Image 1 (cartoon, rainbow, N blue to C red):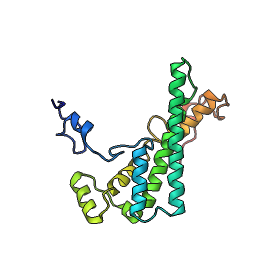
Image 2: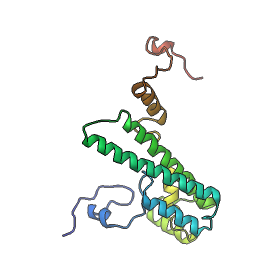
Image 3: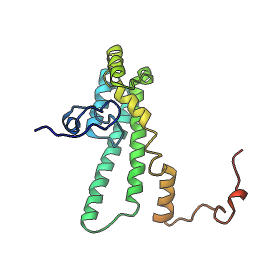
Image 4: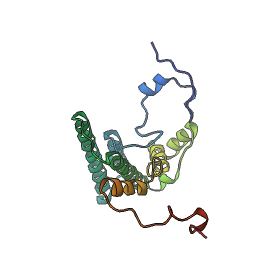
Amino acid sequence: MPALANPGTIAGDLLKRAGDFVTATRTPGAGGGGAMTAGAQKLFVEMAKQSGQINDPNIRQALMRLHTLGEIGRYTTLRLRAEKQAGRDIPGAGNISKLSMSEIVRQSRDLGLAIAGGYGMLHGYDGAARRALDAATGRPLIGFITEMALFAQAPAIYGGTDQVQRNILGERVLGLPKEPNNDRTTSWSALPKNG
């Protein structure tokens, strides 16, 4: 029996059932970012092969950097699970994970755009535009790359910027002193303003 769900999503998926998302063969990472998965790594390798850049030392270095970051993230997740099962906690683990994810997404964006070259400036915002782009370029993964490039700025901002995460780690986990400021003792009207 097919899964039933009321339509209600966005971005051209309004008429799809929830089960369509489970069984559909979608491009990894489409519709949002995330950690460097094995599937995404394979896509980057395949794109580099197709574009003749697989032997470029800069591309190979970026591929290995992403692979390394992905493996570190995987091992960190395994460590966190083991600590949790043992009833222990790693202070700042969430902050570290968020910083790691932000870096992986940025590195993925940079690598994808390096492989895509000038095609990275093209983007289809809906299904018809993506199909037209695929047909015009002969590169079906360009939409994946450009969507990732547009999304890459988000993880470093939502849930607290990277700078906020670093401050939390420094002050709460490492016990470093706060940066000197007088914003708690000075009235709002007396604080310096831009301009």
